[in-house]
Image 1 (cartoon, rainbow, N blue to C red):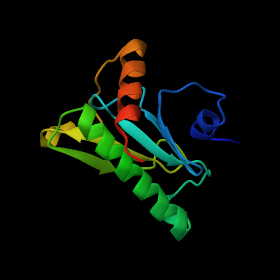
Image 2 (image 1 turned 90 degrees about the vertical axis):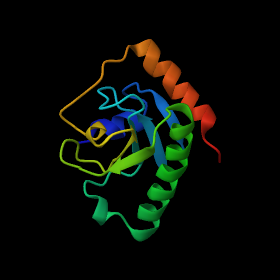
Image 3 (image 1 turned 180 degrees about the vertical axis):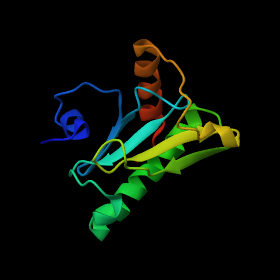
Image 4 (image 1 turned 45 degrees about the horizontal axis):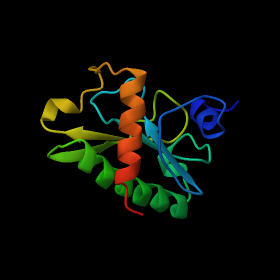
Length: 131
């Protein structure tokens, strides 16, 4: 059965898309830990990041790097943090989160954002990514 992320890539479930390439896709987390929380995924459904073939593993990380640089322009922060947890959804995903203090990378905390705020933020980040 397709993961929720595969359904997002297929357009079966809406999302706040930030970026897309032939093999990778990025969108805002709808339950963000911090404002600007982005998920970067391979379009190919693979559960565990270290099961990706080397080419896609590298491509996903280079894609996430470009997204992170755009994210940093839109959401002022000291650094953009990266986390790969992979427990909640059986589809590889890299969390990108603007960080200003150590506690910003706390998956037990979430910020509320309206659909309008998420839509505007996704558009801003998308426009800031340099390809």
